Figure 1 (cartoon, rainbow, N blue to C red):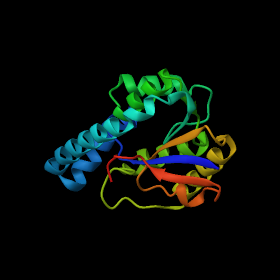
Figure 2 (cartoon, rainbow, N blue to C red):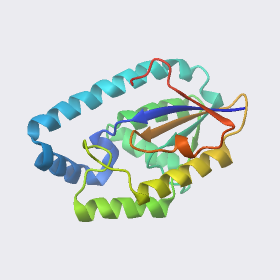
Figure 3 (cartoon, helix red, strand yellow):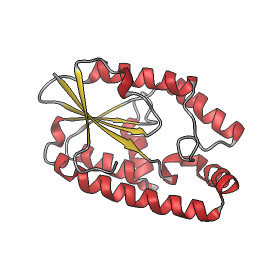
Length: 190
């Protein structure tokens, strides 16, 4: 039996790296500055709750395999996580803390599909997975199928446990093999 803990995440501004300003502008243009400020506060509270709920995982970090939304299979996974953690991403700070305690970081996404997503976001100035009303489409489905296949290929059985941090709009869990038991982070938000 294989086990995976799924944490449907809300992306913070820092998670968008070089696209931060474009994301902020697009969100404010669509929903207003007040909604933006409320969104930022909600994201902060969300990550405080996730960090608190994840504390027990640190004790068994050496048995964790971490899968992260937006983390390409590239050979530089740890470096990318460190960079985003240094920029203030609470998600990546948590991942880094678990890796430093012995968790294994797994490249999760197809780099070509991520490039397509980033290019589309730049071209359209969209707010992927951040804004209310964001939608699931064919590109996200392809990403989800890749992530599910990646988890299937790299997650072993007992005593390993997978920990999947994936944007709340994704449908990776629906695409996993039936021999992977999926739970939510105990005590986590939502």
